[in-house]
Length: 214
Image (cartoon, rainbow, N blue to C red; front, side, top):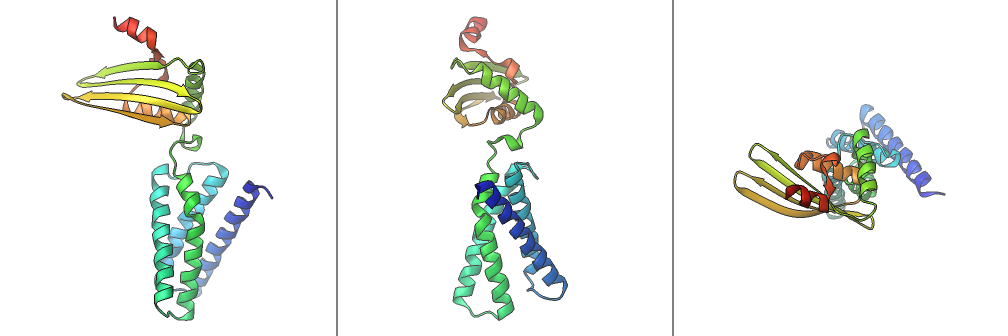
């Protein structure tokens, strides 16, 4: 069985668990926390399907915090089960939800990684391919932008599968400089557009940038 098929079967199993839990709740079963558990479980299943289908749902920023919440919730419920003696229905719900949460934590954490193609727009993917082609000869690309009281300069070089980026930004007499590495060119394009207001067309080979500045 391939890994992708195993993931799909896992997602189907989780979806069925969610449906069973919903039916149980509607027929009078469950605990006072069951509705919250079902809502969180529904989000987890949505993220699981998104990871498997390589589709971006609801933005990347929510999935890693959700993975952290699931990890804390699973640990807390197991500790409660070990330290107390809940009734049978409560114990069943808590054990099921703890196992449910624990298995998807790693997947949701990976799904929340911003540096992957599923979170990029079609234009960013196309610009990323152009940027990758321009960096193929290992020549660094540089760019600068000035708008109002803001300035930004960027230097990008490809090393293996990494896109190493040096950024300097200045505003109102204050400056900051940092290095950041990307593994997908479309993510780099999105970063440049959002944080430096530079596009792929604004980047030039380093020698040309120095010559133009002179």
